Length: 311
Image (cartoon, rainbow, N blue to C red):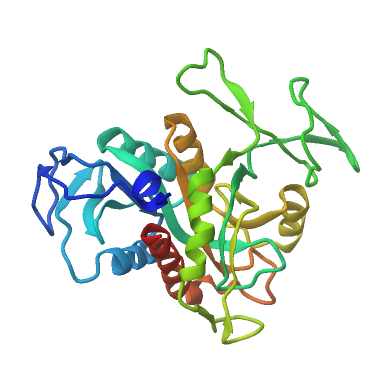
């Protein structure tokens, strides 16, 4: 079966109604007769990388602005993409992903960007595509009554090992067809997209890790599967990183992915998130290197996503 034609890439010749403008915003709704594949980033280095790979020197066939967020419709190798930056951190990511889904005919949500590495098997420059996404900062901050003893609220049932006064919790969620909200531990990437990703990484050109790596010029590792975690925290702490590794067996940590995953779950949209490691979330020696690594590493994530879209 050709997965490209059936599930992921609902391309084809698009007959577009709406703006043909380029370089300025259009506040009317840009309609398309074909579904759009959302290609999402969070902040400027990721956005620049995605636009370099998927747009290059061409112009978008439509640009629309809602609430200050710019949405660019792009034709890429026979597929209709919607490129936009959802913004940094959980609230921005959720708000603007929902905005895109509400305003455009989104078929799937794909993300390419950077993250901090949690799994000690991976180094700066490696690329991970997690299967499950957890909230690491959805939690109870408990009152400490004595060393190792905490006063917890009656409603809370401990879910996992705590980090001092921080006790992990699940998020309450609800979607169409549900009468009450339920606790949800994680949000799973689409199985079909994960299957495509496993095939696609075999086609990725060799990516070289040569910035702030223990083994410079080594081929980057590409991995599909495992867990990712997100929260409104820039994590750069070795002890917390070690705890997160134990609790969630996480491959990476970032500030947006689980929010996007939750929005996709609520809207019943398949999603897949590609993260290239810009740093080790506090596991490195010395200062965090993200300011030096974010641009080339973001481009690696975009290259991997390109091969997924091509597959």
